[in-house]
Every structure is written in structure tokens, then in C-alpha cells.
Length: 240
Picture (cartoon, rainbow, N blue to C red):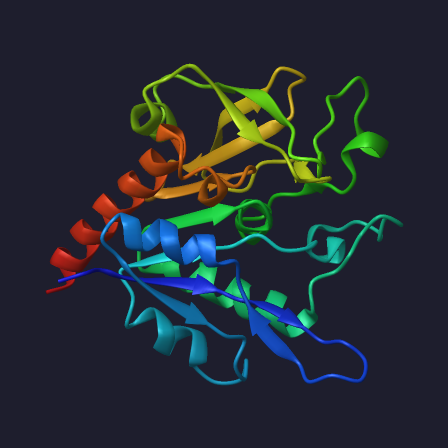
């Protein structure tokens, strides 16, 4: 039986049009290629137990990319570069992450998902890398560029990828600052910017700053989802 994997949706509200839920198809493709059944999780009513009800059906959770977490959640004022997530989506996503962590469900956070995971666990973010850090690489390369990421040994990420260095896409202007409780850094770029974190307190909780779902033609992209799906199957078997 295919493990059911929840993927949160983006929530768009444009003037003159109906609100919509959406997510890049590549997230679903990545799950399907590794034998999972992707289920999209819309930001339904955030009252009551909607997030908990969704989680009860899942064997794993992917928090997809998006815009920016409200910095008031980690005690900072709003930087001019910030594009805030729709508040009800942010709250719903946090409920999903908190619930999944309590259940020790496998979680993979991607870009915004990594940042949300860190904030959820009490960490902070650099709101704008060029403003907050000196002598850094270009991290928000929308032209399709890449950079090298250095993988820390003795980490889940290193075990999954089997390499010390890899090339990744880079489409972000924020990064992890103060680490959340129970998290450790498992990858950085050569300028020291955090590119991946994982939990010491859970079986499989991993956040990456790049977009592995856009790298499915490369071994590194597939290996991350393969490892995640292996943990999701194990989680499903424990719940039987």
C-alpha cells in the first residue's frame, strides 16, 4: 500500500479574483516517483481540529516552498524585503508541523518549509541575507544558477546523499539564524549560510533550503525523497 504524504498548499488572494490553493506539480511527482500517494492539504478553516484530522490520515508531511514567515513570531520587526505568507496559511502550516512533530511523523521542510520548521521550534531567521550578512554568495538566483553545499558528516542528510559536497539550486533571500530547539545544522554553503537542518529529537525531521523536487533528474534530488519515503513506510507500519 502506498504511504499517504501530505503536501501543504500555497494560498493566493488576488484583488478581483477568487482565492485559490496551488502547489508546484513537482512536489507530487517526487512523492509518486518514490512510491507515495500525494495528498494536497488546503488551508481550510483553521478553527477546530482540521490540521489534526489531516495528520491522522498521513504517513509523512512535506512543507513546500512559499514566501516569508512573519518575523514577529521570532521577535523581530518587519524588514522591507519581506513578502508575508497569508496569515491563515501560516497558522495552518504551523499547526501541521507542530502536530506532525508531536506524532513523530516524518517531516521534510523545503525552503519556506525549512524556515517555518526552525521558527516553529523557537528559532529565528535572517530576514534578508544581503542585508543581514556580509560577504555572502548570491542565494536568490532566479536565473537558474546553482552553488555548492557542504554536507556535515554524521548526519541524516549525509547518510542519505552519500556525498560531502553537492550542487543545488538557490532561490531564497532568507536563511536560518538562531537554531530551533533540538535542531542541528547538517549543511552550509561556503559562505557559512545554513542550507539544511535536522532534528536530534525525532526519527526523521529534515529541512533543506534548496528545492530537491526541481532536481529529480539528479541522484541527489531523488535520494532525499527516497529516504523520506522509506521513513514514511516505517511510520505507517508502526501505526498498524
